Structure formats: C-alpha cells, structure tokens
Image (cartoon, rainbow, N blue to C red; front, side, top):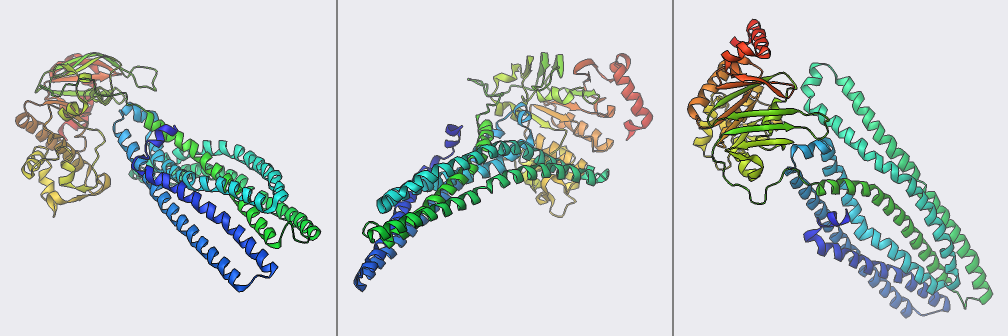
Length: 579
C-alpha cells in the first residue's frame, strides 16, 4: 500500500526530502535556545557585565531568526509536497477509473469512488504533510530535548525517563480504542454520499412524489451515524489533554522539588537557577512533542483506512484490457453473437444465455422485450463495456477482444438509455463525438438527428450553453443531441438504447428514414419499448429473461411470437402506434 501511494510523489520528491531536512535544523536550533538562555541567567546571577548580556542577547536573536527561517522553509516545502502529492493522487485515481470496465465500477459503486477521491484523498494529504513535517519534528524534538536536559540537569532527567513511558502507554491505549471507530466510519461516509447523490440526481422524482421528508430522514440517519462515530472517537481523543496536563504538572512538581534541594544543598554549584529554567523549558518541549506524536498517531490511524481504500482503487486492474497485438481497424459493421452467455460478477444467475445472432453490415435491427430482459446488457457486449462469460461477440468478423479498445469503441457509437450532456456549449458537447468535426459536419449530424430544428430557435444557436446534466433542454432535445453526437463519430455500428423514447412518433419515424438514406452502410441496432420504433427494421429480436424468445420481421413476429403480439395489441388499443 505504501509503495503504491509513494508512486504519486513523483516530481515532489525534492520538496518531500527538503521538508524533514529543514525541520531537523529548526529543532536543533530551538533546543539550543533554552541552553543559551539558562547560561545567560547563570551569568547574570554571577554578576556579569552589560557586555556579556548584549552578547548573549545578539546570539539569541540570531538563533531565533535562523529557527524562523528554517521553519518557513520547511512549511513552504511541506505545503508544496503535500498539495502536489494530493494532486497526483487525484490524477492517478481519476485516470485509473477512466480505464475501469463497468464491472470494475460495479465492484466499488459510484458513491464509494467519490468518497475515495475527495474525503480519503484529503485525509491522506493531511497525513502526508504531518508525516514529513510533524512526525519528524516531534520525535526529534523529544530526543534532542531529552539529551539537552541530561546535559543541563544530569540526574533530574531521570524524571522524564519515568513519566514519558507511562504517558506513552496511556496514549497508545486511547489510540487502540479509537482506530476501529475510524475504520468503520468510512463505510458510513459512503452511505452518506450515496444518499446525497441519489437525491440530487433524482430531485424531480423526489418532488413529483412529495418524498422530500423521507429523503431528509434517510440523509439525517446517515449523517447522524457518521456524527455519532466521530463524537465517540473525539471524546476518547480528548483524554489526551488532561493526561498531558497531569504529566506536565507532575514533572514540574518533581523538577521544582529536586532541583530546589540540589540548589540549596550545593549552594548553586551543581545546578544553577538558569539550569532550572532550562529544565522547565525542555520538559514542556518534551511533553508537547509527545502530545503531538499522539495526535500524529490519530491522524495516521484515520488515514490508514483511507490509504487502503485509495490503494485498492489504484491496484485494481481493469478486467477489460487491450490484447498484446490488437487489431487497429474495424473492417465493417457486421455483428455476430456466437453462443454468448453473460453473468454479472455479483449475480448468481446468467443475465444472458445462449445468444446466437448475425447482423449484416448496414442492416437495421430492432430489439424489444420487457423490463429486465437484458436488452441493454446484450448491446453493452458489442463495445466491450463488459466481456462475455461464455462464447464470442464478433464485430467486422473479429472477436471484440482482439481489437484495440479505442479503435473498437470509436467504431461502435452507443446512445445510452440515460442520456448525458456535459456543461458547455452545444458545439462542445457534440464534439465529444469527433473533436475535429467542422461546423458543417456538426450541422449535418444535427439535421440527421432532427436536432437542428430546435437548435436554430435558440438565440445563440450552436453556442447555446448547456447546464450540467442538460437541465435546460427537454428530454427529447437531449436525446436528439446525443444521437447527433454519436453520428459524428462516423461509426460502423450505431446502437440506440431506448434513446428515442422521449421524442414523438413523427420525429421517431423521420429519424429512422434519415438513417436509412444518410448512413446506409452503418449497422443500426435500436432498442425500444414502442413497436412503431422497430416495426420497419430488417428484423426484430424479442428478448425474454435473457434469452431470445424469437426473431423475424414485423409480420412474422405477429404470427409466431406471443410476447410481440401482446405488446403490439396493447399499444394498438392504447393508441401508442399513432402517437
């Protein structure tokens, strides 16, 4: 896990190494200061002149500025290293997720991936900055201050050797209880994020069904669980302070008692008043360092689970990868399913079983079936969003697993059931299909997708700004823009996954007619709920429970397919075929 995360340091190795270097120098200078002050007090007690006082004063001012300079340098390098590490971590996570198959994403869930890229990375950034600065400073300060206290106070330093292990043990016990709480809280963070995401995405549904109160209760429950866990942990961590204060008072009491005895009994020859002041300073430095070490343990404990979760994503290998010698050209749009069966990773049964279909280049094929009949799953296999469990899917006469992934997906355009537009202008959204598309090509694609007619009515036409998620265009407009975007790829295979459900039947018919005349050599696969959307196809596949119930043209299916006939009759009676 450490090796995985350390790879994200990269160009910030210099800043990472310079931070502890300057921290070490800062600590050494800080620990010299009390020694110089104690010597000055002893000299004053001995009756030194003003010249000696000025000399010591100048040395102390110089040491203070040197310590300040080292502190500023270490702080700057620490900020550069920590922020750079977090930047690289987010970069690597984002790019790793981009390579994931749908199967990999299903394994983690969207809300969990969001938590890992935000909360977990923030925790790791804070932990990393503490490790390269505070985690170096505090143990070093503890050691150097202890050595200096031995040099200054001799046997009095034994007090530290007794109290520090006892305090360390108490802090360790607190941390051991707190850590499991921090480990469990991350899963609750995932639930909290999931609740927020679902509510924002489904805001229209929530308001339509007046379920705001239910959603608020669900969110409050998730937020309360996170709050309760953190409250328990913080209550335990809060015990650090009284333990620390108790230790400081005990040490000061013992130092005052024994040092007073030594000063009185030796008349100040073995231990001076200045040495006593230095011992107090070193005791505070030691105990504050120990307290900071305990806080580092808390932060590192919190970040260990975050580190494991982030490393889990970084170490996850996509189960869909390029072959060693990939094919770089898709010759045509022929699609074939050769005895294909498919099962989702978390599912016990097969979503698709024994699928055998051959679609010739340029044909238009319709797929119809009830909810859960695996229509979308079937077409997801063509562009290798999932890999088959058994059998083969062939495009252009070659197994899809033999192609370069980018080559295959550029040849297969998919207009998904859930249409997604990104914030930006219409022109920028359309160029997702082809970054180099000219304005003429964009207009032609929109005319083909019947989108030009409403785009021209916007004041800014193709420069109209689309809000995030396409909230300022209607469902039908969004679908037509997504179809235009897919057409711009000039695909060999065009898949429309129920992507004309929000357009009227007239526009639907015009779309199909345009496809036949404008892109005759492109294989077109149309998933639909309306018979009118597929009845003119070369042939229609009827899906039922992950199997092909029957296939043929409209007239043949009316005769031999019970499912198709029932759907057709229900839609005729309901007037669906006529809009």
